[in-house]
Structure formats: structure tokens, C-alpha cells
Length: 396
Image 1: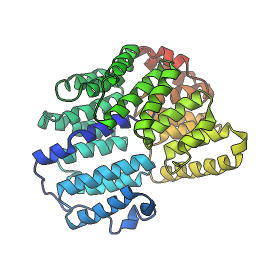
Image 2: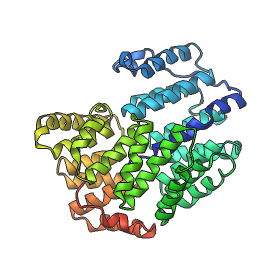
Image 3: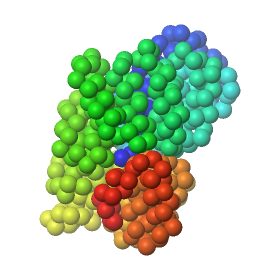
Image 4: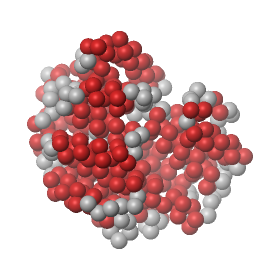
């Protein structure tokens, strides 16, 4: 119900250390790095977050050795994680700065190329991400995480058959639950949701020593179950995943969306009250507070804060949260035409179920039959009619 971050996270988790051990670093042009820490991090609470404090220390090490591949990859990975957790795009700039020696180069070490592709995906540059991943798969076909990452990006843009081919190629290279999880997203969006869900549930019966993989698979199962209308199973999977990682921002957003659909907004207050720095989660909180009369004062403050953040994003040319802003325009600001324009722009870039839902809801609210036909034609072509049928005319 957001971009497919869990799959990307697992792809990164597999073997960056193995990649670094196998391939030697490569020097390139002098990198660009911010002149001081306050360019990105000084305004954030490092003292209260050991991970951010460690990132700051790592950046100092990288400044002394800017072409050290292992350090650059470590900084970029940590910055990507911070950007996703906090919903702060400045960290994506930090990750890009760490990869500066290899950002525009053609001859790029595989670890840096995989991270570059992942960062482009996080920035919604799916075309650029796929170009890097295509090259990486050709040059280093022995790297399964490249195909896993490419399968994720292909699923985001709606190329399900190509995504499945990459997933199928992972057999005998990664754990079976990872193969099944990789296959589940594109298969569930190409008319085989029930079969994909049952296969994923069966894979989850077998214990995995990797908690991250199990949490990822449980989150996927929850999302597919929700699309199938089995909300009891969806909640069970989300709670299982939260028990494994209570800080996962993507998971919290997915579970919050389910709670909104079940009209249980008060539970969202506890779920994400401490995550208001994350724009995606703040939106869910605002949508929940709007339904609770006793939250009117804090709702007004959070609504204004989120509106200011969206305005700031537009001013800096950041279009990463068009889907969320569309929901905000429709559900909070009662601006169906503005919401529809954002939903159309978003649909031109990414085509996940949440993107489809936002487009349908905005089109219906705006009374735009042509826009609704674009969405329903896509749904019919990919056997998502049941998902469309359960989509209400207003945002969650």
C-alpha cells in the first residue's frame, strides 16, 4: 500500500558483504560531499537515535576516504534505511553523496551499482533503476539480489511477467521463502492472488532463521489477504510481522490502511503516534484523527504540518509522495480535481494496487469517467475486479 520497500530491503540484506568480499573497490572521479554535517543531519535527533549517531560517525570516516567502497556502501545503506524510516528525503541525498564516485560512471562495482539502482527506486526513478539493474544482471548474473531487486521494481511499474521470470531464476540461489515471496507480488497482481497467497502462507509454516525475511513475507501475506477481502487473516499477518519488527515504517503504513478500512482509527493513534517525522505515516495519523472528534486540536496541527511538508516538497521538485498527497487532497482538503491530477501523474510512474485505488477514488470523486476507465481497464486486464469492487468512493 506504499512502494514495495520490503522486497528492496531484503534484496539489500542478502549479500552486500559477499559482494564486497568478491569484488575489489574501484576508484573514480573525486566525489562531492556536503561541507558540513548540518547539510543533512544536524537538524535531526542523533543524540536520541544511536543509528543516526553511527551514521554521522561513518560519514566522517568516508570524508577521510571518499573512494573507499566498503565505507561508501555502508554509509549509503544506513542513509537509505534512515530515509525510509523517517520519511526524510534528505537522507536519500546523503546516500547519493556517498555513492558520488560511481553515480554517473559506467564502470561501477556491483555493490555500488546495486545500491545506486535501489536509491533510484527510492527516488521513484524507476527507469534509471531498471537500466542499472539490467546492466548488473548482464555483467554479474551470479548475483541473485540483483534479480530480486529488479523483480520488485518491475512489479511496481506493472511488468508482472518480467518480474516473475526474475523470481523464477532465483530458485536454488536463495531460500525457498524468498522465491515464493518474490513470486507472490507479481502473481497476485496478474490474476493469481489466491494461489500466490496460499503459497506464501505455506512457506511461512517453515521456520526461517532470518527474522527480516519472515517479517517481509508476513507483510506481503497481509497485503494480499487484504486485497482478497480476508481482513482477519490480513491483520493476523501484520501483527505477526510487527512482533518481528515493531519499527518497520512500511509495515505500519500497511496496517494503518487496514485499520482505516475497518473503521478503527483510534488504534492508529497508538500505532504511529511516535512516527510523525515520516510523511507517509503522518498522513495515516491525520486520516485517523479526522474521524475522532476528541482529536480535533491535534488533527488541525498535524493537518497543517502535513500540508506544509507537501508544499515544501513541490518547491524543491520532489514528486515522491504524489500518491499520499492525492489522498490528502481528497480525504482532508476535499479537493477532488487536485487529487485526481496528482493521482494521474502518479499513475504514469507507478502502478501498485494503492496507486490504482487512489486513481479510482479520485476519479469517482471528481466525476471523471475517462480517468475511472483508465483504472478499470487496467484492473480488468489484470483480473483485479474484486479489488476495484471493494474500493470506496472516498479515500481511507
